[in-house]
Length: 299
Image (tube, rainbow, N blue to C red; front, top):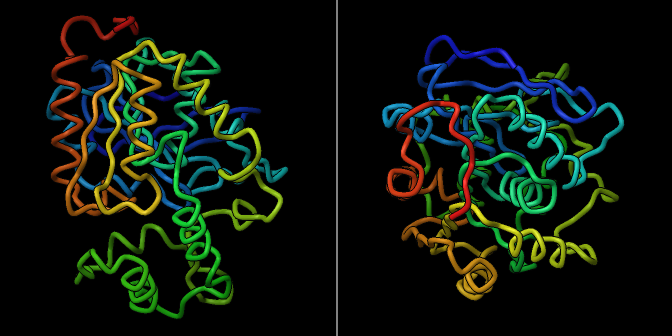
């Protein structure tokens, strides 16, 4: 891993099997780290102002492009299993001199939970964003349908923005499309496509509804011994209140934040409220004080 020298500095990690993972860091290089891990089909730019806000609190906030997403390498063998994403997180977390806080949304949360609970990834605290072992299958199918709906891509940013607005009717359509542009890549045919490896959505890749998935997630949750926060979007069609309560039964010490006005993409829907919940949690249970070499501890 290369150390950050300034806000917005680009970093490179070596993931599972040596795959190159790109990231962007905010805050001092000696500050204790927070790894921000986005959802499937997103990029490191999905976090809005969260990274800068955490940097203001004294953290080194590192937003990562997961394998096959953004500027990170595509898996040459098409390996996008949940366990492989988890192995990437183990590799990244182990690259720091201090155990990082892990903040994972959806896919990033699945991988973080598996990495900490089953693989022993070093972590100081864990924040799961709208994901838990029990979820609504209809919500997952809706996400998959959107991600696979336009393999031909889009002719313009405006066309892509229209598609997003149709998928997220509760979110105001942005007038400025620069943020959306960071999640798209232009192909040789001139059309814009989402900035992820199409094999990530291959029919034979592991799915959240696969047999044994929920049981592995349950086992990972039961094993958690570190400060934990579950953030749910109140409008989410993926994580229900019942699903959140099931997680809290498995992890009795976990905190819970229910963000009004937000759907599954909590950080993008209500970044202000999401960021406040994370900042308040970390200020209470894992303030970035003392040596940056502090290690994770039981809670």
